[in-house]
Image (cartoon, one colour):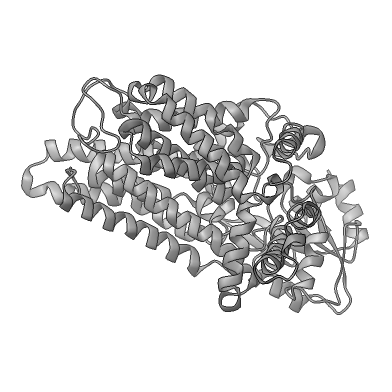
Length: 556
C-alpha cells in the first residue's frame, strides 16, 4: 500500500527494495534501446579521448615507463587532446574508458562507452527514490522515482556518452550528501557529498557553481547553519577528490583551474553557439525566460502539476499529512519548512537565474541545466505524497488502495506512454503544455540539435539509397559523417562536404544554424527519406535540382 512509512527496519527494507527497483528499471530501459540513439555531435571526440585514456592507463599499470606516463607532457597529450572540441575536465571520460574497456567487446564500441551514462542514471534513480522515501514515505519514493523516469529528455541524455548525465548525478549526490550531513551530522553523508562535489568539479565547469545554491540553503536551514564548519570540511574534501581524479590538475592545480575558469567564462567569444527560440535565431544571448519556458514545455504536464503541489505543501510552516518523517535524514521540526523541498526550490531557482544571465550559454535544449531536473522530480514526489495523504484521509478505508492506485495511474500512465513512444528521439520530446513536438514546431521551437536523430536505421537507408561515389552536402557540418565512415556506419565511397549545393543534401533540422537555402529545402521540398517524430522532420535526404530550387526561390 502506498502511504506513510515509519523509519523502522521494515520500512527501510521496503524503501531499499523500491529504490533498487527504480535503479533496475532505469538500467533496463536505457539498455534496451541504447544502440538506437544516433551518435551525437560530441560523442566521437569523447570516445576517441577515452581510447587515449585506456592506452595511458595500460602504460601506467603495465609499464615499463610509468614515470614517463605520469609526466606533465604525457598527461597533457592524453587528457587535454584537441582542447577546443574536448575542453572539459576528464572524470566522465575516465568512466567511459572503464565501461568501454569492460563491456565494449560485448555490447559494441558505442554502447560500451555509453554504458557509463546508463550507470549514472540508474544510480541517480535509486538515490533519488531513496531520499524521497526517507522524506515522505512510500508515496514520495514512488512519486519521485516515477517522475524521474518519465522525463524523456533526461532519459535521452542517459543514452549519450557525454558530460551531462554524469554531471547531473554528481551534482545531486553532492547536494543530498551535504544536506544529509547538515541535518544529521553523519560522516557517511559528508563523505557522499564530498565525492559528489569532487566528481562534479572534475567533469565540467558547471560543477564549480555547485556552492552557490548550497550556500543559499545553508543560510535558510537552521540545522545546516549549526554545522557550517563540517560543510567547509566537505567542500575541502571535494576539492581533494577533484584533484585526485583529474590528472590535468596534478602538476599545475592552480593554473589548471584558472585556465578552465577563463575559457568557461568567455564562451561568447570562444564557442558562440546560436539558439532557435520562438521562431527566431539568437546568436548567443537569448531572452531571460528561455530556460523557464523550456522547463515548462519539455516535462509531462502531470510532473509539472505535482511539482507545484509539492512546493505548496513543502514550504508551509506546519506539520501535517505527508510531512518529513521524524528521525529520517530530512526530518523537519514542527513549524519548519520541508528541508528537501526548500533545497529543491533553491536549486530550480538557481538554474533559472543562472541561465537568465547574458553571459550564460543556452544552446541545446535543456542540456546545460540538466542537473536541475532531479530536483523537479523530488518536488513531484512531494506533491504525489501530499495527494496520496489527502486521498487516504478523505476516502473510506475499503476504497483507499483503489483510489491511490487510480491516482498514480492517472498521473504517471500517460507520462510513461509518452516517454516510451519518444524512443529513440528522446531529445526531440515536448510536453502536452505546448502540444507535443508538432505544437512546438508551430510555435518556433528547435526540433533537434545533436545528431541523435540520425539513428542507425536511417543511416542504413542512406547507405542503400545513395549511388556509389555520391557527393553529399551535409548540414550543419561534415566532419561528423567522415567519422561515421571511419567507424563503418556509413559507406567509405561516399564523399561528404559542407559545400552547398551538391547532388545530394543530408539536412539535419538544427534550425539555429539554418541559412536561407536550408530553410527553403526544409519548408518546401520533400525529402527522399526522412526521420520524423510526431510528424516533425528531424533529418532528411534530398536530391538536389538547381532548376527546381531556383524556381522555388522565385515563387512567393
